[in-house]
Image 1: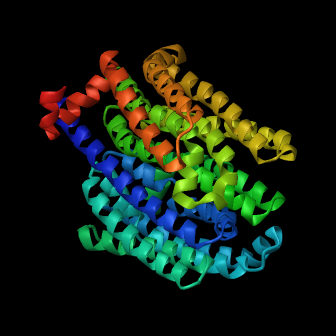
Image 2 (image 1 turned 180 degrees about the vertical axis):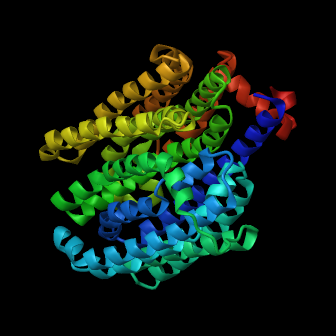
Length: 486
């Protein structure tokens, strides 16, 4: 990378990371408080609607957000055309959800889902007004501003949700939190950004952008449907409480990997797009992205897997203990999440949304087969099916990345192996602590965290893991005391 792009990328990674950690960290704390005030079944009701809201939201984006980022010479006419189109689609999607609400409630045999669906559909219209601003900030690799907006919106919506839960509003406190967060975020984006639409619209612009974005739309639809299909199946076949346990476990398992993967992925996509025609630079950028993200996600997921029981007990109480085995299995699924994300970013940055779509179709067929085989044996076996499909999906992603960049799977595994080995050693060490008779879960979790972090850093330092050394070189100028220690 050139010096200017390298510095811009490092700064963007810094702010993108703190944007995700700040927003999701605050949501995590808010979620813990709400989990202690609300019943698992109330979280299950919201989880039942997740897939419907996510599908409708994907139509609002329509792939245009990603197309706008990928197109380096996008005009103001392009931006305005997308803006007005998004608003129209948002209104139509919200209306269709309102009409479909009785059928959704009948499917789950839960009448309360009728008003819940109709109120939550307002999110679609609200979000449509902020898509352009978010896409432009991402395209310009400006995550510092996104951090400020996200933190403020998450904080004030969290206060509203907690207050309503404390006052006994039940599931409606979760609805109020969701609506207010999106409303605050959209309003703040309009306040802090100077971009404004003009009265111009071009079908030609939409057609040109849709040529790229349409494939991402269908890929995104498939991803959303199958990412949330387990919520639908579990919600249909099991109780709302069971779905609540699964959704909470899924949230905990995704929190570390999504924070880090999203932080790096949001920066990687526009950066990869900038150097899309320079194969060698792009290949090196992918190697660094994979090495750095797994340096952080592997120990987090393995550590959470081992410490799942005291973690759940302390944070949200023993009433949530049934979610522990789900959480442990989902941590294995989560290990693959950043590997998928980086490899797929390469395809998008290269403009190969056609390959992206083909991959999504193949992987989703595998997911459907796994669900059909495993659902009769319960939720844990269904998650084991997710692990198997994740392994297959990683192989498929690597195959196409290897073809485009001459970076085959065995080389990727060689780059990832140092982080996997050191993380596994750390995991074995903190698992050994569970065999020791410690007074309570608080002390056990505290000792596991301290030992895990210390041991992992020492292993990486003395083994001179390449990605660890590079991360230290990035952090050193920002934390002067580290110069003396390391």
